[in-house]
Length: 239
Image (tube, rainbow, N blue to C red; front, side, top):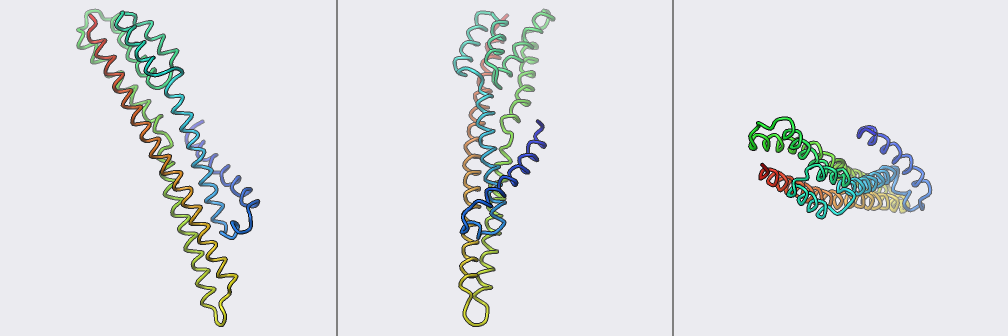
C-alpha cells in the first residue's frame, strides 16, 4: 500500500473510530465538545504509527542477530567465499543485509566480468553501489517519523483551541447580567480542561515516540555505515 493511501485510510478510520468511542464516553468527557473527537482520532493515529514503526524497524533488523550475521559475513569474506556471504545476506534479510548483499554482488560481478580492472576501481564502484543502496534504505527507516512529529504539534494546537473555546464559554457565563450561570460556567471549564488533557496526551505520546524512533534509526544507520565500511575494507584487501 502506498504511503499516501495508508495515511488517507488511517485518517478516515481514525475519525470514524473516534466518533464511536466519543459516543460511548462518560458525559463529563463529552462535555469537552466535538474537538474531543479530533483528539481521540489523533491519539489513535499516533498509536498506529508507533506500532507501524516498531514492526518496520524490527523487520529492518532482519531475522537473526545482527552482530552474529555481520561476524558470519566477515568470516566468509575473509575465507574468500563471496557467494556464501551473499547467501547469508539472503537468509538474514533486513536493511543492513540488503545493502551488504548489493555491495557483494557488485564486487562479484566486477571480478567475474572485468578481471583487468584495478582493485581501486573495483572498490570505488562497490562503494558507490553501497551508498546508493543506503540512500534507498534509510528513507524506509525514517518513514512516518514526520507524521509523529506533526501529530504531536497538531494535537497541542487542537487542545489549545478547545481550551480557548471552553474559557470563552466560561467568561460568557460570568458576564451575564445578574447571577452567573453556574452550569455554563462549569461546562466551559470542563471543556477547557478536557481538551487540554486530550491534547497533552496525544502530544506526549507523539514526542516520546518521535525521539525514541529517531534515536533508534540513527543508531541503526550508524551500524549499517560501520558494517558497510568494514566489508568494503575487507574486500579491498582481496586480490
